[in-house]
Length: 120
Image (cartoon, rainbow, N blue to C red; front, side, top):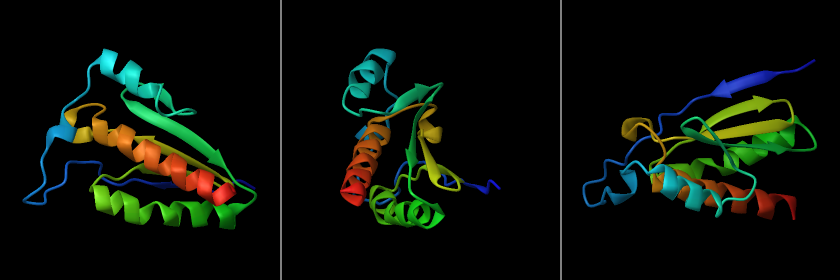
């Protein structure tokens, strides 16, 4: 039996008054190519960054998803998540910018670090 859960959060620009919006500018294809080198394992699919993480079981997968809440909230940028039993697919895009921004790559790096800490 496969259990699929799709959680979608609005990925957008933070609205905090003192925060700058320089990270919300849509990246060029050249910038995206350069940034992809900084996030091993992440793939470009259309206008999204995507990575699938695999865990021992459903409980471990959900524990990983729960670890993503605080960093996403801190950045004011939220991933789209799809959970298939022991796999979590994370997709990042800045919908309000119409593509990828620096925030997507920053969050991808943070998520990769969280995963590495969880499996070690």
